[in-house]
Length: 458
Ligand code: 4AD
Ligand code: MG
Image 1 (tube, rainbow, N blue to C red):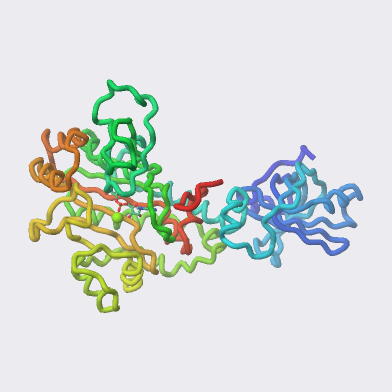
Image 2 (cartoon, rainbow, N blue to C red):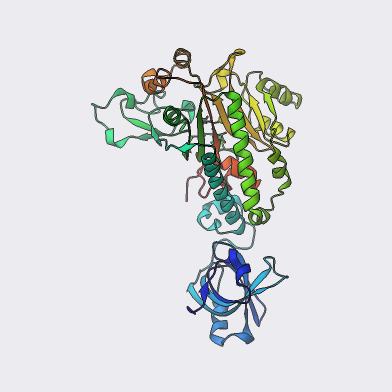
């Protein structure tokens, strides 16, 4: 067995006619008396292998008969080009070793509901479609890194345990900060000021990060262009297909950059990512049945920009009851998203529906210089970005209006005291991006182990 060389399925075309070894799992099988077809997955791809009774010793055929779904095997055989097979190749088995027999694999050929599949997420990840989605997610991650490196950004790791909110207090995840627990000498900045009853104020809590933005803002004064990329947490109390409680975000931040530059940077990133996926994931996109035409359409750029005011008019015409200064709900986002065949920038939202750090629009100080980027095909928001308030006085004033505990944000205000500059940035939700590019119905399939309001296992 061992004298043949091991190959990986994604390189199968290089091994036609050779006798090779492949190690993997049987994800499907059928037999017709003298033939046994074992569909094999080795991590890099999928191939059909055939055991022909008349061509192998009886012991080998008997072993093949014992194989069940998801049994792990080592197979030796010859690779043949075969036009009838979907992959174009087939492997004729000469010998095989059962590494471990799998008993009663719970995910079968019949349809399973989402709840069953999520309970078995550790196994569901093996299925072809889930395999393809994770491969695409991986390419998206690497394409974000490589694009940003090309654009001159460096990665700055923001902390996960943080003392204050970046995106409003309603979705904060508090965790007892154990090193300081019950230590009366710990400073007041570790004492949480959430509404009474939710958390005892006298005990030290940290929060899981909602976004690394505030920290990477500090880093632009050292490096100019920076990004972070890590897990973020929001105690979302809504059960929608667009919300997770733990998700991955890339925040980018740029010194000497204004609102329009910021949108341009976002457009470039999206084009670079989609281009990479189209270049590298043809097979995966085919497995998930993704029509690539809508993706190809966005490569030319020229993403439309409309104001919040204009967007409100559009959704009102579609019969949505929405106030002039409201934020958009899921339904409105879907309408706006379907109106355009490219990602859509919506800019200049009313101050009161956006975060404290956004810069006022000088043309209308009741609004801010922000943008939400809405993905097409009904997907809704994938990026939130803005120019940041760079005036110490105006930022302090805004935080006071919103009743922020100024002591907790002293360090952030410092950034406006020592060489403040116009600066901008954005955050992109990885799972929202994956869901759109793969055209998934729900964010839960875009991440290996989704955490949602009603589920955080396995
Ligand atoms: O729009 P958001 O809240 O913006 C920020 O957090 C800024 N601090 C980013 C920045 O300017 N650096 O979140 C950014 C993106 C959203 O557009 C969305 O794609 C994603 O993060 N996101 C979520 N994804 C999954 N589940 C959730 N609950 C999400 N909340 C936000
Ligand atoms: Mg947002």
